[in-house]
Image: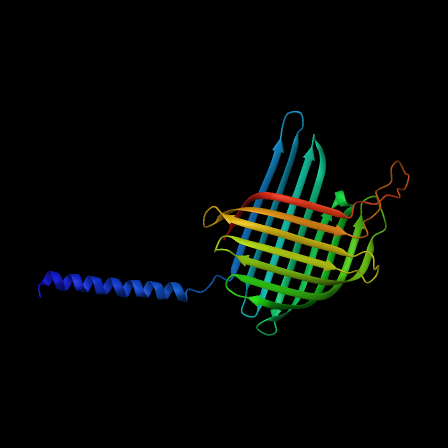
Length: 258
């Protein structure tokens, strides 16, 4: 056998070994324990009507050995002809401790400011149990049940409220690919101090990839308050009409994931 053939066979063998090692390393590479994502959307018009609406969203999660930390935030600011017509701030924190492979105990807190809906502030703390009903490569579904406290202050100087509440929430996500997914979350908050003052929040989102890190995100947020506060007094005269129960927000923008 000529030396050239020996070198060729050695090169082929070395390439095969390197390729096999690379595949094995890629398969054994640990999944990153964290996820960071942010999204941005902007709508603006000029001329006869000057309207500007900016929406920002952010979320972060980190999976430790036996527990997970999650955090999310959202901001919405809107003006029309120099007058503010939209304002929304949201922040949530949650920690999940593994009890079994599917069952977790959670502790969480969230804050909301939505003055167009009559809320100066809304703070909720709670604890409970979560169960991972579906956990596959493409589909994940978790349902949670818990109890907590709700503190609210209202626009117009109405008396603040401190209530004992429950919490029932669900989170479903379907991955079409590594960068494209559908996500649906919903939270129902029954009020045990005032039975008609229950709350419902639901969020839908679809992300289509532009690249490995960037994508187009379309989201729709629903906030429903079954017992909204009264409108603020006008020239010292108390109002008998309440804020609307329903608030819906549609956003389209760019999302960055790392």
